[in-house]
Image (cartoon, rainbow, N blue to C red):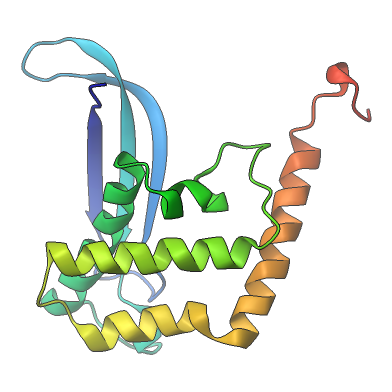
Length: 169
């Protein structure tokens, strides 16, 4: 089946250092050449100075390339509907995000995005890639992430619960 995807990339070298991100939305896209409207996946990528490099880091061309390749890795995983991407609770629809070990699913998705990033930019900054991935793989962070994700998923389920379908009002 044909897929249409639009990717909007914002690079903000003056932002406070933080994690870059990719958000997926669905919507209607207008083909600028034909004027046709069709359903499309819309990806919004935001690239910032990388907080894994410290609080006073600047966005360099090398770190921008590394972060952008990684975020595009998430886009490729989403469009290819890979298992790691599909299992990541951050990519699941609201109300259906529960998984017993959400941190493990997020870490698998992050590993996959780094693997794809290396195909996109084989000369990416491995030091930065390892620092970013290591932050997810740290056992203390993993345990905290698992708990935070479970709480967020449960809170979202309660917030979006439909009392007309037999739930609590």
